[in-house]
Length: 336
Image (cartoon, rainbow, N blue to C red; front, top):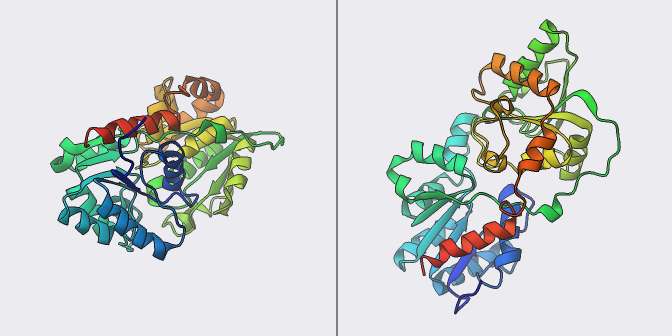
């Protein structure tokens, strides 16, 4: 990959933290730092000055996620007729509505990025289909670039505790979009009516509406937000990872769960499905609100483990961050 001049593309995305977008941005930095301009400084105030300068000095601005500085950069891009590409990791407005969150930080910038960007790249094909359906006015400029995976970092936990056959692991806490309450009701159904002795290890946000009801179930052990390594260790001890999301742009957790030996049950809305070539209907929850379907699929996967089939179906080259970085480079080149 080579451009005549490096100062053509500014990648405006934070790659210093451990968030989902941060991990992806760090991967792009690793493979594109000789082709695109990235932030050099961690200090947020210096980064504002950096962002303004790099926006003025480059032809194409890639917004990877939504940031406070976008309030300054978007008007600059419009004033100086810069090409804008928006990598859409999530949808703040929709997720806030579904989760009943009143904090609207970032929603205005998000709305302007959707309106004014020349190209919107959702982080999975699955996600892009939903966004196009809900925003038909932007459908012609919405495409996708599925998040790449840094397989070198995807090593399983070295925890050697025996895996519990009756254990289920959930992430996302009590947020409505994760539909973990419905999973708990499905497990209650199996335990009460079919004499299973399933238990749930729940991780994630405590601010979700469903937490008070979820923690009343006697089989739920709620851990809150824990260091990432502790979550990985938990995956290595549990049998079944369930992600019953109403909306899920990608979720690296799906891949991490498979790497760490979990069997898998996910909703049809999960973007990481892009890479699960061997999935069948029994691996997928079609209606995240249908407790009977969830219970039926849990029972099926417990009796018919799918870890090896799903993990081995992922094309590690096509899903690699280096491959996706090369795709991003080629996409950007069409705007030069």
